[in-house]
Length: 235
Image (cartoon, rainbow, N blue to C red; front, side):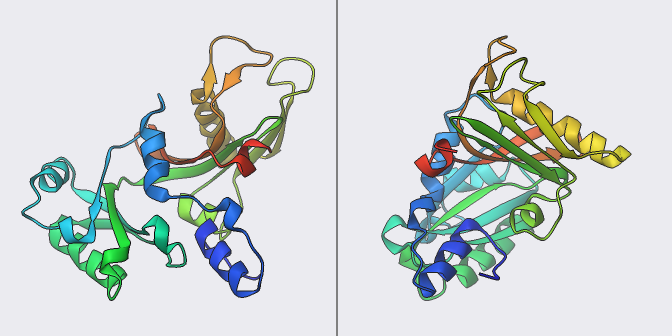
């Protein structure tokens, strides 16, 4: 299709060409609420309507007072799925966040939810897809560039859950020979281990679905997105 962007971007371009990819669409706000319920390392987020994104909103301001920089996302409400999602990273202070929200929703203010979360510098960003048979992982220098197809992964693996042997024996790695690639692989596997339950080294119980994560400069892993769409689960 020649498009690089988020899954939402692909869905919209495909629709223009008469291709239906709506089965991969989801409600971003609901996705984040589902992520919050999982026992995974993650940052808090706050969501409200565009009209409630004001300085007099005490809950919003209490949330923002805990952090210095922010990611702000303008997410269309479920009834307006044809509208694009619009994220902006590394904003500082309420005024810059409000300015972006105004520009992103102009003319469609009633059709958007504003989601705000902490922004932190990252050394890596990665994706894990855990399905009924396969697990696929990729990691790169930047999550957005990785997801948008702009960066080649520093490391990636595929795991056949039905294979024989320990889980490491069922995992095939790609890339990962340079020092940086080996370091990235280490964090990718650490992120995968966050999705495992118990001590079963052969066929562990896993959180299933589509996951995005970042690795902060401190080395902390934070999960930032989650989808449990059946199209990912059936992988």
